Length: 467
Ligand code: DUC
Ligand code: ZN
Ligand code: ZN
Image (cartoon, rainbow, N blue to C red; front, side, top):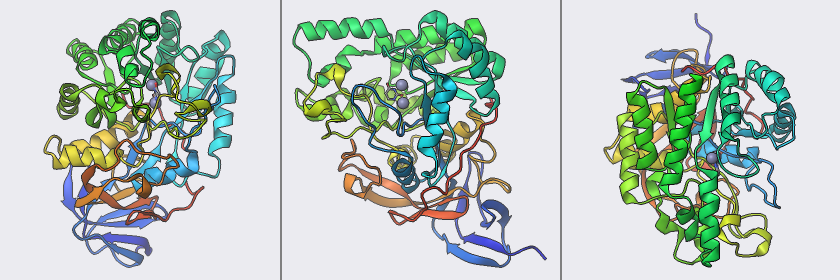
């Protein structure tokens, strides 16, 4: 006779990227042991009648406790960030071990392990950020780290302290090709941004709204095209992160039509915010400063279409948490700053899935299967975590979000579980919420309350991307 189950979830409809069926879920030792009916005795049972059981979300782009210069500090560490993620139906996070120029990449990874250690309530992996591809990094550290399970890394085409020049980008892409890693590209043209910023400054245009003026779509379009060209020259797939609108999308579709393997990610801010949210001279607009900036409603439509048509493979939060009213946050040094000195980033770990579910699934723009694919299955595959993460199969980790698809929720920062003092989505009502989340078979959130355990999440080495 089969060993007793630890937990039985009954009555839910199971949704994966491919299938929809009714079955009970039997869990033993944190893993899905059986899917079916009459699964036998269990120590505990959750009645999930009327709910949808989806694979827990994989948020493949979020920033937690990332070391900052200029007196800045991220508001979320692995404890608060993972807690917030769990309460929004996410069970895996992949933040960034960021190399500071001059630093060894391994030192950055080691430091990031220290920061994560014993804090996360859900499983996590690391991407790296490569900002200084010196010969020793390219020849020794990066190949070794890829082989050790750090199989993806981000590069920047802008920001003085992070950006690589074109030659350096070609070099790191070549290392990725040899090692089978996936490079995530922040595509904005640095010189264009600084030239536009200087002109705006000379005209006295320094309030938050000009952040968007300094980074128009052409800046993103050009860099996206250049990154696609580099990918072709080196013959390696890349992933363009945080795509904001139609012009970059056109470039990605052009590449797809030519048969290139260009993956693309977008984020809630490009569906729900516009440049108008940066205000008209009011400093509150700083809350919505992120890069690339939010565009307009026509571009929101273009991003929705890109999600529906498969142009995008991944939907991430790009959670980059800075407090608004904080001398280490958006009001750096306790003052209202010129837009170019305001830290870029907005919080979104907890609201990522409900925002997409509400506007996408309940709004009739994408199917439930597309929702699962974009938010869980495809990021798990691209970042080497599938099938442990990203599906509900026998043998997968029991990372499960139980959704009430009709639940109406008005988002308030007071109900969220991050440590950030605002949400850009304050007062917005969504339909559909993950009312219970389980990470490796243990409840981590229930009815908007965090019930998990800091430190229960484990670090995962990633396999090579399934490209
Ligand atoms: N890019 C990110 O991916 N996150 C925050 C800021 C940025 O420019
Ligand atoms: Zn970026
Ligand atoms: Zn980011």
